[in-house]
Amino acid sequence: MSQSSSLNRNLLVLHATVMIWGFTGILGNLISLPSIYLVWYRVLIAFITLFIYFKATRSTISVNRQSLIKLILTGAIVGAHWIFFFQSIKSATVSVALVCLSSVTLFTAILEPLISRKKVSKLEIFTGLMIISGIFLIFKFETRYSLGITFGLVSAFCASLFSIINSRQVKKHAAPVISFYEMLGAWVWISLYLALTSGFNSSLKLPLSDFIYLLILGTVCTSLAYVAGVSVMKELSAFRVALVTNLEPVYGIILAFLFFGKREHMTLGFYAGTVVILSSIFLYPYIRNKVEKRKLSKHILSG
Image 1: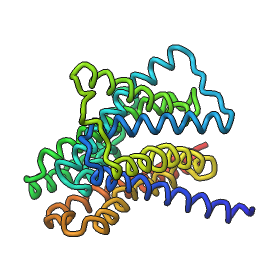
Image 2: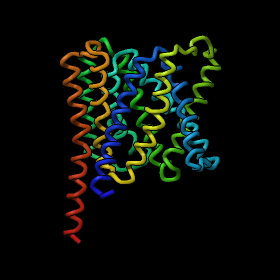
Image 3: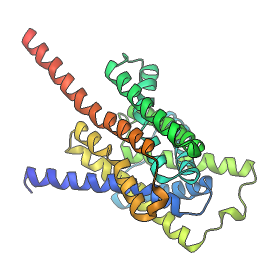
Image 4: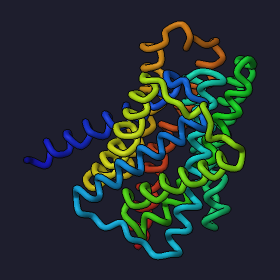
């Protein structure tokens, strides 16, 4: 296979993966279970599927005790992220939840310098301010969905937090291994919460339709998509991966219109805020790439 065809194949896989991630919101809306039970089943199916994947590929999943504790604890944040995300969908719409999830860039710009003790980026702060203005527009015109928007923003905060943590863990362990233990951790923490609150009751019963949707969610949209998303990173640049990944809310909103029609129609203010947020996210990696190239050119010239 030529380098060009290999690149095109990986790009196609990446776009398909991002579209599958966007489809997660559709399944969340179709599943009738409350959010916490939905996520409990999702992570259960996901870590069982990943375990089967490791056995089939004869891959090792062993980690040291310190890493195991960190990954299990991070799993609590992953579980919280998904619970709030699906609650946002059920309290508002798929479109609202996906747009709010786009604010991950904003929270990362704030949290990463604090956690990693990195220098604050002026470009990231500017991007964050643009996203805040977009969120403000959505809040102003979609007051009926205030609770759903709040859940969506909390979900984005959790996503940003565990992404920063994982950026350190991925230097020590393979991405599927990290995912396996975090899925397991999420399931353990949610199970503990349900046990303490007498949550293991009739609410866990699954209608046949929910069972089918959950199987798709746990296998295709979680385990398979995650492994596929990681595999393309071997050949595609981080910049290109980031750019395509930003299409998730776009694909998700288009799919939501196709599946739910008028239920996904919003005010003009929502779309204005969405355009501001998505424009900021798309422009950020492009401008950052230009700035880094300019700095490199100046360094070469000065040297």
